[in-house]
Amino acid sequence: MVGERKVVTITGPKMVELRAAPSASELQPGQALVRVSAVGVCATDVELYDGTMGYYHSGLASFPLVPGHEWAGEILALGPGALDPRLRVGQRVVGEHCTGCEPAPRCNVCQRRGGLLRCPRRKETGFFGRDGAFQTELVFPAAQLHALPKQVTDLEAVLAEPLCTALKAVRLADVDSAPKTSAGPRVAVVGDGAVGLLLLQALRWRHSARVLLLGARKQRLQRARELGAEA
Image (tube, rainbow, N blue to C red):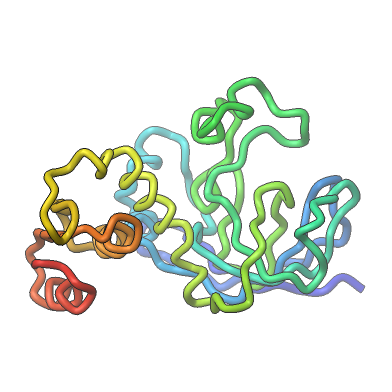
């Protein structure tokens, strides 16, 4: 007997339903079935909820939609061909936001560094092509899953996706060329949102940087100071 999963579905602007759907009865080659244990609410998810997200207007996204691209979970089953030795049933994982060609082989665009974001056949979890993690179970390409170390909790792992955004920004900013002081490079971060606070932590961790964080929300600026910013 096929089990049941619960799915949070956005059916229209500011309209949400909790739906029941059958669990996956069979996995395709290279797929994994994951039990979702934690999922984040990104500012983009709020835009998906209220209907203002740009993908609606460009035609990439449409209602009904299952959001959730920042998540963590546990592998329940692996389909044939899911041979990554780091993955096993019971393994805690996070998944990439963007997935490229399925099934393999991937196109030339996918095979380049950062190519998944440019693949014309890409799927963006929780936006278009693939339901997001606002559900109890999720079928996901095993090749785009990443095993979690034991010391990282599920709630912490939810921040892996936005943290990757922050780390890429640090790399592209070429912080090593920033003005140096005796206490390390000095860098300004504009914005006190989640990515801004993650940028602050990444800069202090990777470069021992002095960070000036600019923002408009007192509570966020206080949090930035607690994290070491010159807010």
